[in-house]
Length: 150
Image (cartoon, rainbow, N blue to C red; front, top):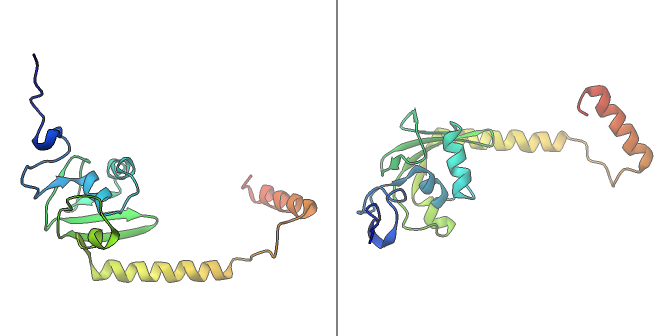
């Protein structure tokens, strides 16, 4: 009869939680629990792709996150600077998730500037009244080909 040596409390494998005390959590799981990424696999890919830094260093997804750690997350052209305040027990509602981290004032200001720039860019983008007809669609495709986009 064989037993699982690495099974922790509640039947979890050793890779999911780093401590039985609940004072640390894997980085990819923390990012998912605080709703910065829609899925844990997206969080793992972001960490592996170098979009997430822990205390100024590029780390792996299994690195433990503790309260007081500083995270830098590059997401959608925006760089978030976060301080870990708590370790969530589960992936709960958004207000619970926001209570687990604190965003720096500089990061909030940069996000507001980026949002304003995106809003202004959207206002200056021409919007057609309706769907293009066949001739307009051909003209648009020809224009895009001349620009090297298609």
